[in-house]
Image (cartoon, rainbow, N blue to C red; front, side, top):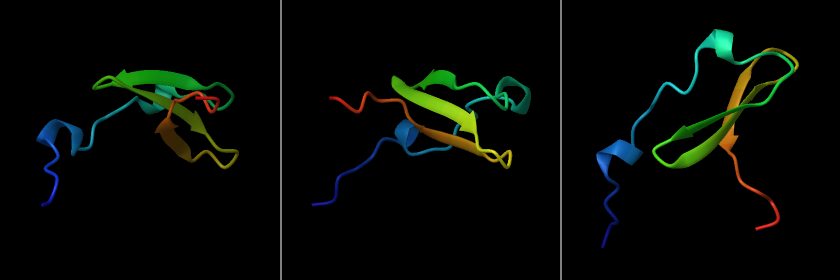
Length: 56
């Protein structure tokens, strides 16, 4: 039986504007109760990943 994923969690969302994500700082945002960490690599590419404590 295939698990059904609700539409809200299976869609793309705008997490931040380009101007909000600086070159040196980490940026945190919560979307649908999921903590997201956003930052830029040295080449300027934006990266978004789950903001979780690795010790859990």
